[in-house]
Length: 81
Image (cartoon, rainbow, N blue to C red):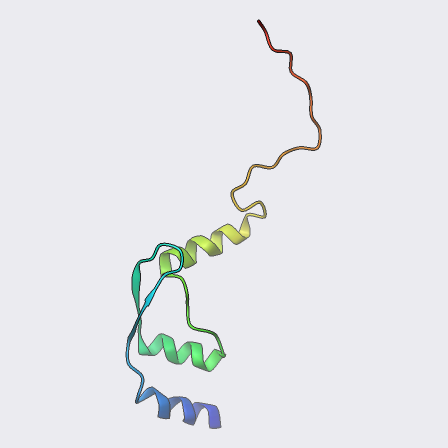
């Protein structure tokens, strides 16, 4: 309960911020409502824009992260001359 009161007290002084994405270097707004949400959940401020954040989240699902899996089985293929 105290954290909710404290958060609402600080939200009066919060302003929208502009953050630069670490991936694409685009600047994106971080509005007061998002700042309050992050503060309530104890999260750090975002470092990626929403587009890069979504792409990063999807890439995490791919355990190879876009790399090609190389098989342990190697077969010699004859080269025709």
